[in-house]
Image 1 (tube, helix red, strand yellow):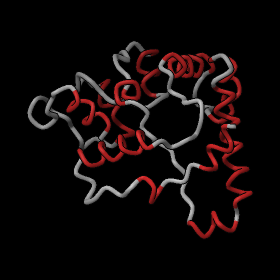
Image 2: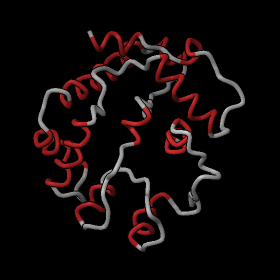
Image 3: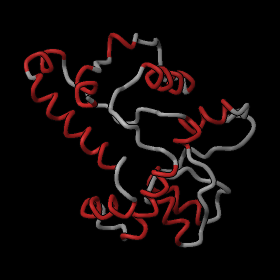
Length: 184
């Protein structure tokens, strides 16, 4: 959906100006690409870097750079849980902010070394390359505040993909007080 949104923002109609094969399981797109059945592929990491390392392809653009800050990750809780457990919500948010502070104040190599245990299938050099790319692209925000601008971007992407029947108001769904508290 993000890829098609970016195409449309650049006056490219994904339905008539090119052919997008949506039948390939997302986990198999890199293999399909290396099998010469496509000129381009959309890949998450570590697959994009693996294609480069193998000499099978090159990263030519970043959907994250071209789309803006799309809130790929958000955490949800019922209003009743938030009301009954504000300390838990704040502690969780503070821990996430601590991670954001870490990635925004360390080198690619330091970050790669710290996350390596979570990615045993990816070698240290590839992890450093991936993290370095993220740092160069300003992938990580400095805080966790889910802005109205990012919310509207997400709705625009979902709407453009035909996934929305209405656009709920930002104030109805998003609570920022805990992220704001963690950012202080």
